[in-house]
Image (cartoon, rainbow, N blue to C red):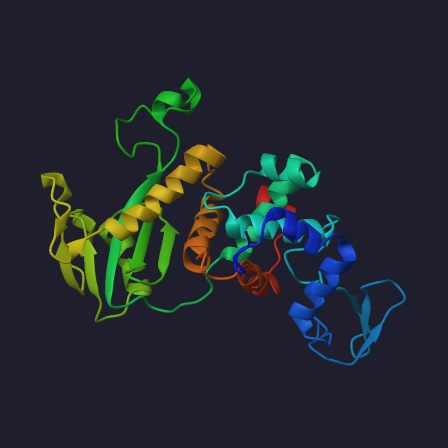
Length: 304
């Protein structure tokens, strides 16, 4: 039985059965009844004879609701775009391009492109600082050496060898941030901490040496000595984030290329921050749509 908060895949397809219903919905969400030129920002607009097309009488340029968005210059119908966004905000571990291509009847290549554009919209553009009690921890993403072909093995030891480090920072009871790093030196990690955490924050980490000597009130749990909780000091919250990310990595995607890794991380962080099932599904979709306007990434950007 529908609880009024969640919407099934069947219901989302009924809500947006074709391109026109999806376009009208997107126009309302973007312009609230008054189209605005994405080129010059003027509101003196003339509706064109082609459905969904408008002309700005100030700059004389034609545009649609797709212009200057993640949907720009895509031939995929907007109802399929909305279904893909629905899947991104509701699928706890994500959805693969192969699965999406089967569900909406497009090629795997097109589905991959759609999902990468949606992940671009998931990017956190806010520079707000986390505060209160904050946990920080690093993880390493990449295939297991034993599962790689010989030409891809690094032969440089166990542990994080051949993998890419990701730093995660979680405000207890609040937001999560994560950033792909070039290395885990003290300089790199503390630069990220300083750009993400308020000065009066209480920081909880493990005993990795790169966290030592920071400017925060700092509590450490000694994981190397099998210590995982010491009063208020623990990193259980951020480690639960890594558990979810790796379930998606191994269970859905199987591999993340270094080039696109930050986008996959953005997707998971967005779902954790905005995907609470207590928030109505359409509100979650609308929140992601609001970030899709004014962002665009081309296929060339993704593949070169």
